[in-house]
Length: 464
Image 1 (spheres, rainbow, N blue to C red):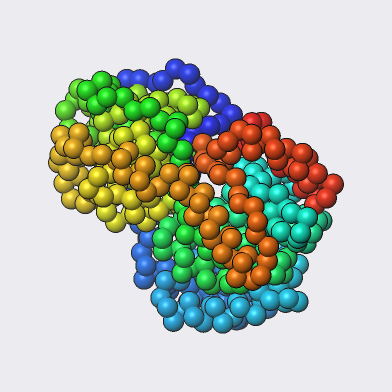
Image 2: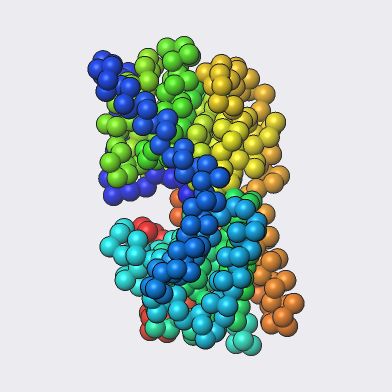
């Protein structure tokens, strides 16, 4: 998942104050129990593989073609054991080749959740998408960067999908790890070239091979696209915030780990939480959870604020934290690096940007003695140099060159023309061109998409 906290509602004034009176013992216990155990079974590898085997068996036993196919795709997400993945690959591979590849769209396999949601794929208007290269008169393909699975499904459902894939390479960025294989399968049969999909975790490169030749993994994560020019770090002595956590309010972000640790830290710490409302989770639930865990500090909460305000807070913090057990690449830690703010994460987490935590950028916490580890991290925060490391390793400029090299190498290896490089890209909550003149240069091309391909691209400036 990417960071940033844009939304329909924005609150310009933070919500501050210590959690009020502790809830009744029974209510506090229930909140703590739910927080600690939610998702634990889902993260158990043995149970995941058992589930994958059961799904594989159901795919063989069921009479419903749609259910059989959906069981296969779900099993792909659950399976970690190599023998199980090998069996799944043998069953899926023939269905990725024409003419059998049409079966995914014919049965609408695995995409029910993309109807009637905030990203209803019946609306053939792409969001979070930018043209990086125009097609050439010599048959040279253009490049469209389109984040998120629902946008690829919109392209797949559009009446001009085949023509689009004759003109463009599709580059995407997945939003979770392991990936949603259904969004991959619906691209089957649309092009002789693969869709180039960025990973959310280094472990995903192997996982994407399950869907070859439809998908070509791009070893680039969403957190690799941050533009350092947007970050003007404060001097460490001038920073107001002791602990910053940029994470939506949903349960998988595990704010409760912070709340549990805060009980063992000084009461006068400045603790700032930046989040976004989700289903059943708002500031109200966050504060109730903080009370249940006995937090004594004054908490400053910001909900649905714009990305500029988020950046300002990141540049004003001594340390930043992310406590998710599993999600996508998560951009917030790398944003913290460019704010010259060291980042702490859990050592057993499955989060893409964890790969960038080192002795320059931050630390990894063990579960035991988290409060003590957090105090030590605060005390040593000034010795880290995260911005220096990030400038050398993971800027949007470096990443744009890496993507260009992969696409150019693919084209040339297949004797396809490649004479023009892509326009550099960055992520600023949404993808955007690094150079403003590139955005203006592609406007006339984007305007032709509805008539030519049957889908539109919403301008980034209009929101997405």
